[in-house]
Length: 254
Image (cartoon, rainbow, N blue to C red; front, side):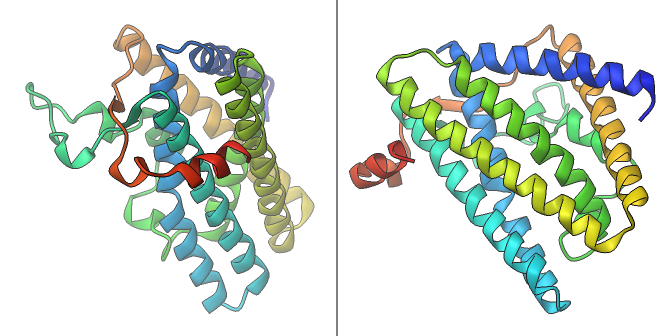
């Protein structure tokens, strides 16, 4: 990784850490942040489960088991964020009710991610399916995301205030950070099982560079929108959680 990339990595990571920590601490911005995390964590579950099945079919039982556990963790994380939203009397918006385009005919911003568009630049949607994605592409790209998520979640958790509701959320987010650390570790090991050390380093550097470029694209998009984030939440609690007293106690104790 060259000096330019290293500098932008440090600057970009610091900026993201500051913004996400501030948004987690502020009750006005916390729901949208939580909703984004719920969508990301829960949305990855089918992909990881399909990858686990593919690894098993290819005879890699070790990776299949790791991916299966990864999917279970992400499902749990999604439930934690949904529970946190419930505590604020919020829930993720129903995307089935959201138009594909705005009144101006542009794609709805909530259905696309400038970050991931840049992160996976050059890869078609078809080639990123769990049935076709190159294993090294998956391992390298996801390792970087999980490694950084571990640090980001820990910072956000420690930025939370000391009220009882936030203390429970802090414990849950710190447990998520530990899970992400474990995911990053197994993904690195999976790369080392396939490549010599110098090529693992090169692969990690490639995706670190892509992450820096993706952060720059995301910042550019925010500037164009004057810092405004599209809303991902609506008032109310999902019907399946309205009577979840037992679930509430369980998640609060995570």
